[in-house]
Length: 113
Image 1 (cartoon, rainbow, N blue to C red):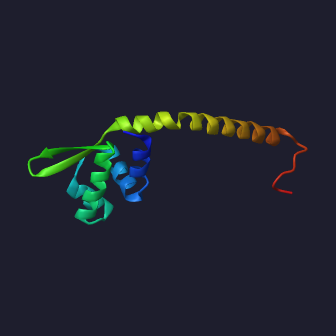
Image 2: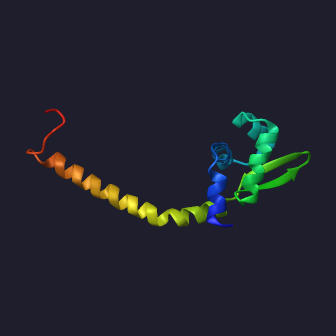
Image 3: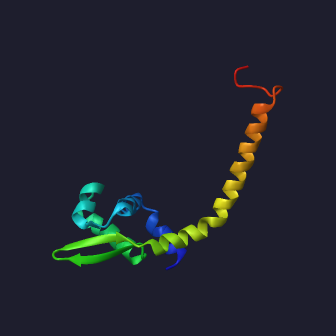
């Protein structure tokens, strides 16, 4: 699955909410409908997009369809984000060092002045 497909699937806030729900445990469609406050047809459309993107799996349990998160695509996104995370961590570390230096400098202007 391409990263573009994953990003597109996750661009919608309702689909991100569904992914967040499935993070804790697999859920039947009815629970997802209730938790998201969407209609059943709307929820089914969002689940279809997530399923086609490979983000969720579905299994039949008697008359119910139970959806579960598939961690593999999330791992792909995590790998894609890794260089950006390193960049931000480096920048935040530098900011932290600068703030520490300023806090230790008695000549630095304070917010109390």
